[in-house]
Image 1 (cartoon, helix red, strand yellow):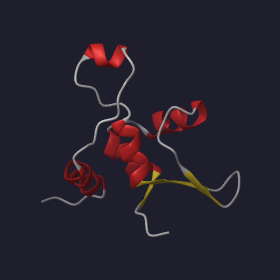
Image 2 (cartoon, helix red, strand yellow):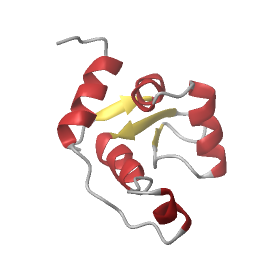
Image 3 (cartoon, helix red, strand yellow):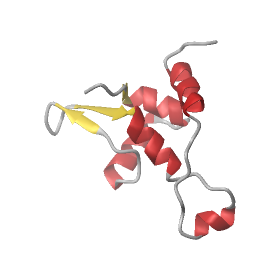
Length: 92
């Protein structure tokens, strides 16, 4: 696959939300895209790319942009890396 894959707890910590919130988003289809291994009851994982895309789609320069058609903006990959390291318990 070649992509970095995170668990639900790692993803929730990275996004600053509870695991329950991440599960609710998954049910409603409003959270980051996910991968399920092992069938309908299998383990859920999130690719770093899917998380970055989801964050970029919710990034705005002002509240008026949020109400208008949101335009995806690029995000700083090092910020995502730092959050990922913190979610894994690494400290600089």
